[in-house]
Length: 173
Image 1 (cartoon, rainbow, N blue to C red):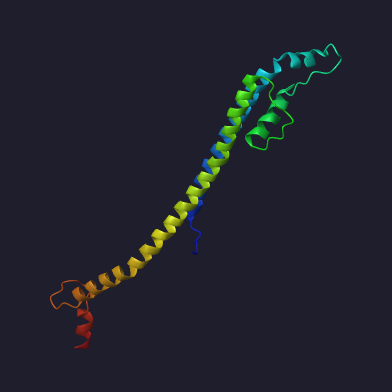
Image 2 (cartoon, one colour):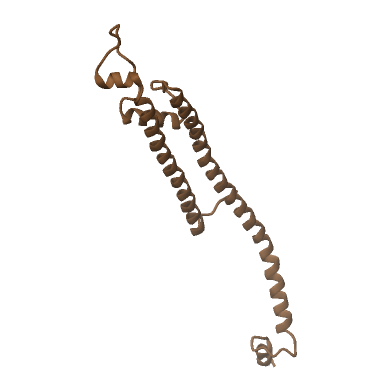
């Protein structure tokens, strides 16, 4: 099927781009919000407070704190939202793990959303092309019918229209 480029196609693509940008914007806001929440939950653990204060465990080992800064939590949020999941930063608390599980599901939904928007846009385009193809099939018979009716009207001897063949007939006689 051959697709034609028209102005309406451009406006439909612009509408599609607006929907995609809206989805990306919402994903960005969710990323910032959930990263901040996970940072607040995980930074308040005893291990992270020990790291922040520069203290060690009794045996001299360094406590592990994956979320020392907000940047660490943004990195974790981006990797989780995009469903990559390196595993280099993981929540230690049960509250953090519950937030992480929810955020991973939200990440999968945000990948499905643009796919649905693009799929709908392509389906509407194909449907429009199909409709135009059927309209073109009906256009010629309708035009022929209108021409035949007009010729019948114009050829009528009692026609009062100035756009008839009477002038041509008068010139021949």
